Length: 528
Image 1 (spheres, rainbow, N blue to C red):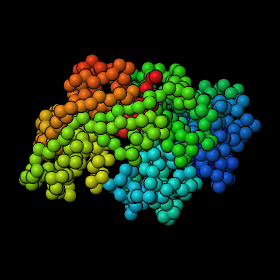
Image 2 (image 1 turned 90 degrees about the vertical axis):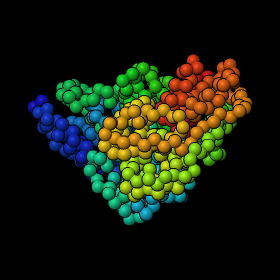
Image 3 (image 1 turned 45 degrees about the vertical axis):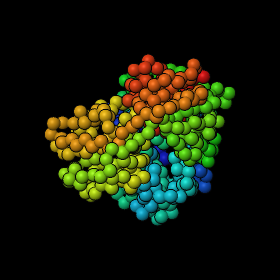
Image 4 (image 1 turned 120 degrees about the horizontal axis):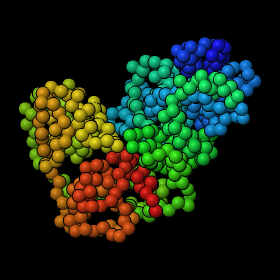
């Protein structure tokens, strides 16, 4: 292409980074371009909440007008800011690779409380103007205060630095692109299945005139086909819900080796408890329609669930089921007893790492009042164990993401980290040593059984519509005498519990994440 292109962009530091990124990619394929800064309505209006701006053209309308008038050749947008339909005469010619769509919670260091979820002190004030973020944050931490936060990324960070808030939430993509140094803050990274991002978060859209076929063809080397297919699901969901202005909607889709996974969070307002769904499909075709159908007001849901663990009224799962009008029966079918009452201090003398595979292991190990070196590091499997460790004032140095993958993969990742060191494993008597078997011969393993599980002598049946099993031993207890009723559905908290159900020939649903959040998603996703 011989002509010099004009790229339209907003003037913020992040928008200029994005436009220059596209300019550089164009130069790599032999196309020269220059930037033209255009101010948008979203830049001028600073008194409205961001959730009333995103996705309705407040950050894009003026760029699109310049494009239609022929004053610029292409416009670079944060894809999440675009309405779900293009103005007549315009099209998205290319989308970029996706920057990490996770959220970052930046916390003033004197407002950190490692014993609480998200490492944030009780009743902390968090800055965000996104109702999507607000609803999901409050579902995890209802004690938080949420205040409006506007401005570009550096401005928002300066407001935190000025202590106008105890913490603020930002998209990781913007921070990464601007290479902002966050060392003065405590940073909590919230993965896309924990706080579900806005549709197309982390993706750039290159918009052109439909009639400019030469430019559309020239831009194809910049187009990421896989990202386009993933965000098509997200933005179709957004369009079908007619969201983007008032609706606190998060949707995130990603391709896997065997299909597509998608997470959706929807609430009526920032104060409303969000309903969440996890869906796996072999193809992206029809996936958005399947997601939206699950949220239909007349859709049939189970009336009751039984879960094999004790729960409080304030637990996430209890509140999520209450939001759906589902009754919860919660009781454990096993008893847990300590094996040792005194810990030999010599065991800890040369330990580099302590690996916990369960919350029970954490609880019973710390009941022994261990005297730990300040250099000892902690590893856990899953967010539930991480939260239990935090409640005791310790932040894990390694959290094995067992969600969606095998414990063997967690073990292999951990093995790389601890090669040649000494690792202590507080565990249940007779538990499987899967992680230990993944470690190298150079790594010293110390197994320390600290508790054992015993089945209750008598287990009464539950007549709930859904049975949720939270451990293999609870499965053993319930099916010692098969107490299952016809038409009851089963949810297994994780793969080890699922293996026990497999041995009994029982069908079940496996959540993506083995925690209360994942269990709530699984119950909502059941077909009735």
